[in-house]
Image (cartoon, rainbow over all chains, first blue to last red; front, side, top):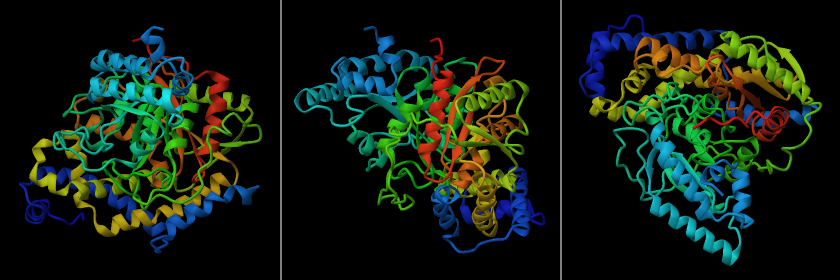
Length: 71
Length: 471
């Protein structure tokens, strides 16, 4: 994403999403999104990923009964 | 009985007074309508109100009561809700210019359940534009003002709900919580707010912001009132596939139980990192009061929790931008500055990062579970780590100062949306500027009963919900 050209991005957004996009605004907003994306990429590299779609929900539901097993 | 005294009741007391024929629904509804029209105008609480229709509903409730008895636990009690709960044939503006005049063709399950319990829906309450904001700013419908001091923010996005309940204009109100939007106005306005577990309360017929995190929750004056509303709202709904078919306990049945032996985790990392001295002093008192009430305090460290905020932000922005993509391009001038500024980055989130952010919930929740729930029954955290800011202190909506404050306000609330855990915000006292301070209790999935039980024990110990703004 750091390699992206904001002016190209503005043109691309105008083309794909329609509307008149301001390249200067895109530069600022891209930086915000870029920060967030960098955090996710770092985290994804450091933490094991479970890729089953329902994995989070399975864990979430398993926790429901955790109190009984704790006791 | 004077209107101000009637309007000052708790939801539970109002319901009992009506059911016991001590007061009529017309008397109680009139008191709230008067309050909504007077204080409501001063604080910009109301998005829509039809006095005649409200009184007609109250008369019908009184007639029903006389003929058949109460229709449910909230029979004849006037409530009002965030202006994003759809009711068929009634406008729902979602705090926006874009949705002004929108008339939905369905009624939200939350409203259907409250209707079934006998509650009256007497007004639509102002909110942050499209529920995207933690402060209460709204350049489309105007800022809602804090009942404790109108120079200060109410918190958002359920700004009108928090302020209306605190101002004794309604007995309870629905909010919605995607990153803190029930708990933040509850904290800023000194009332109780609960974000239920993901899947506990149906979102059908409510304005979506981010379906991964959107939750429906009540704001009330007391903890018992929150339990009363949760008793009505909770439960599976085939119209919302995210809801889960698990039994719903009677939250009032165990709410007065002794909390001796319950273990409350107090985190030593992340949540207290940016707490100011005056807010910290109030929170320290709260922890001591919970100990006095019988709980055991367990201090611990939570790994990976610092990932929750950026992941939550990324998911909210991506999903919100997707939902708003057409309007962002066809009606950009109709958005407020802060909404537009926060929506746009969502269009630039790579799909792979979005999916990673979703998938990372599992290891982050597993780490949280191992660190917290292996040693404790629930977690204590600040709701807002800093004093409630004034509108002046926050600066112009959309500015860098504003955006930084907006992020700071939600610092301690968003992690629980990422993890899907039930969390309640409880008034704890006041900071040096005279505005409320609050803390959160987060529990295991679907264990709303325990967080309400501990919150109620704290309320009994301290009288934390007795303070009322002088209006």
